[in-house]
Image 1: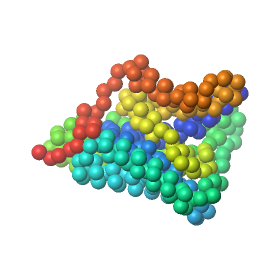
Image 2: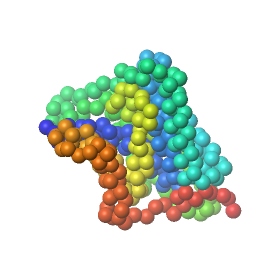
Image 3: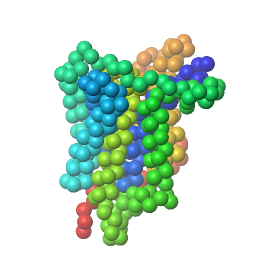
Image 4: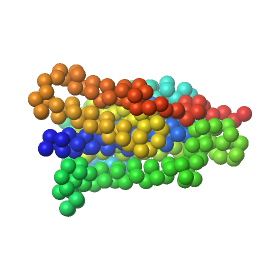
Length: 302
């Protein structure tokens, strides 16, 4: 029973992280590092709750969350692709700005009204009754099912045998050579960033509307960074990224499950668990990996 509860909670926490990580995988394979993933998710969570409060519709709120992520993505695209700014500096600045802006926006627009109805669980008949697996996979919210579907479709499009996958990989491995063959490197990178930001915004909406049903200051609390780590731990491949994201989600769930099980660890240690798992995952114990050759390298036509 405890194992099932941990897995259910872990997958719930992993879904926002997973959809953001798969989006980041697309962008990094094209050569762009989005440390601003945290800003995209936090902005998505804030705009999702705000949209739900203003319209009374959770689906419109989720759409607002997606648009909120896209807003950050547009800024990232302009700075990283068009102006060739340092991608790491842009990401850190975007995260700080998003934290300040959403905190102020919540005071201004959601003062005393930060909770929303959001999405409720929709168990699939029969399948949801399967022991352990059923409650974990087949008792999600409508938005959760949508996120899982988007992850699956994105993973398939990113496959090494698809046209999109080949173009993205060529852009990330050798942008100069890709440009010589006629590939629109800047356009591909821009589209990948926008796709990443849309998925991250949707992940923030999933967190706010399906899991928490509210917005709180800095509610992502490092999930965006964990999504970036999941891509590295997954060796820049879809299956590995999915496994890493789910593992981080379960590690987050342990923060709440261990005290309920009577394990008397200090709260600070419990908070560290997912980040300790992340450090182990990228320390080399999970196997050697090689990043795309042009990752973080701005493209300038010779």
